Image (tube, rainbow, N blue to C red; front, side, top):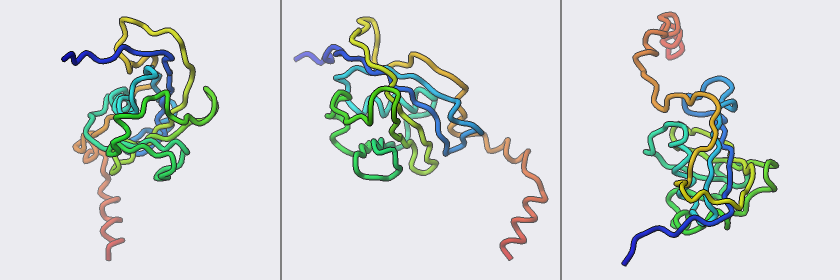
Length: 170
C-alpha cells in the first residue's frame, strides 16, 4: 500500500496573513505579513500549521480560524481540536467574500493570543510541480520573537515602576 500523498490540485490559493497583535507583538504589527500558497485539496490543518511556522514560531500551541472575523465566535470556527480540520479541504471553506475583500481571523496560542488576519489574495490554476505546498511566496517585516528573552526585560525594568506596583498592592 502506497503512502504517497495525493498530487496537489488547482486552484492554488494565495492568502495574505498579517499580524494583528497579541502576544509580544511590536507597534504596528499589521505591517508584518506573509503570503502563503496552498493547494485546493489540502486541508485546513495544513494552513493552520503553516501560519505560525511562516512567522518563525514554534508549532507548540493550539490555534483556531474564525471565518466571521470575530474572536471566539463559534459560527464558522475551525479549531485545531476539531476532527474536521483534517478532513475539510481549503476549496470547501466558505471563504468570506471575493479575493482581497474581507479577511477572517486566525488565533494562535490561546494564552498569548497572537491574532492574524487572513485574506484571500488570489487563486491560480497553475500548480508548480516542484513546489511543496503550503509555501511562503512573499514576506514583509520581521516577525517578533514568540518567546522574548525575559532577561532583557529585567534590564529595562525601572525600580520606580516596581515601587509603584508595590504601592498599588497596599
